[in-house]
Amino acid sequence: MKRKNAFILGNILMGLGMIAMFSSLAYVLLSHIFGFGQSELLTGSALMGLFVGALIWLAGARIGGREEVADKYWWLKNYDERYRRKKHQHL
Image (tube, rainbow, N blue to C red; front, side, top):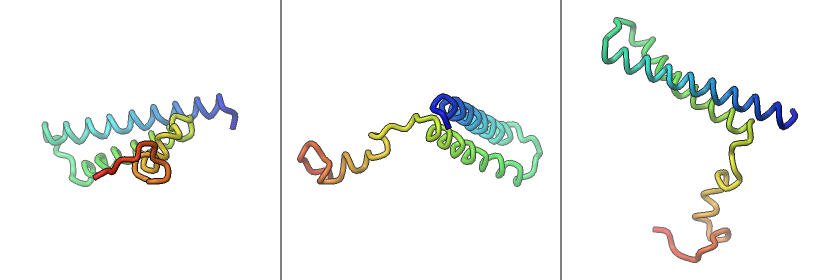
């Protein structure tokens, strides 16, 4: 996949994931506040949609190239003795 196409696909997936997260969150909150009379299964599945939207957003970030090398290896950079620049102890 060309870089431009990957960037566009990543942005589309990130947008779809964000829409899914916001709409799921809005439905769950509004159903609890106003009591639509919907089943608990529908509210639970909308809550699950929040996590599915987050996964879609993360997949779009991965495809679109929004992840940085420093983000991927943050744990190694900050907590692994071999890769740490400053020689101080983390508690």
